Length: 321
Image (cartoon, rainbow, N blue to C red):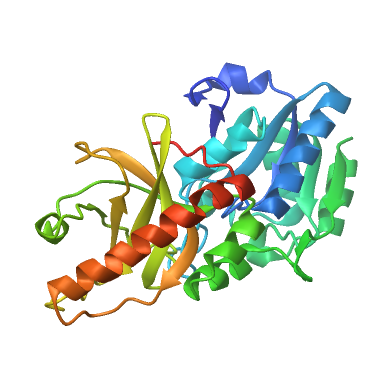
């Protein structure tokens, strides 16, 4: 188990510090840290105040089933989001170390013994222990035997259906970044270092930054998006193309995120930059000429600028660099 103090620069606690803890703990994988997860985190903070304990999160160091589903949020982003919801401690477990526990030993040894929890909160569909055999009822009875309480929250709904990471992935895969944003409670973002590209944009007066996402990350569908980038505390409208950059030659087959930051000039190579996806503008297109490409980018820039202020009013852009 790794325990990080999220309100103190993610410092890792020593064993004696962990033994001194008493926690109110939200349980889950928390991929996306969406509005349903936010309800769990808020409840954990409420329980912590009621029980004079520290609000904590129990989750995994790594995805439980890598390759089964793409990630919405890498661990570093999850930790930052937990901290923004006033969670004090993240209790991180390797899935391989806990996957074979039966429900009662899991509660006794992990939640009560290792995490020192006095109260837990989970979602209505939470499953745990070997082969996902543990239910919220099992969790309730096992925690009660150790004098700890469980609170089970109902689903948080948006547009007539429960919010879930699976639903958000589907929105992104179809390019519906607006619906994804409502379910996340913020814009979907891509945070990666800037790498060198072909520098085609510079030749037509529209310089871009390039970022290479890993295959593990869930990206919006290929296409062009009105986005925003925050650099040195200033938010800029931008235009991002997700895809294989067919442009004129069509010889690139590696997924890429290529962004023109409107009104910014500066050196960003090797710096981590966060691009937030505000709305979809169009499909990815192969253009017959550089002039046609430049004309379309000019239209995309105008659309991004025209919607920038309105979009900020919906979801404030305070993204890390």
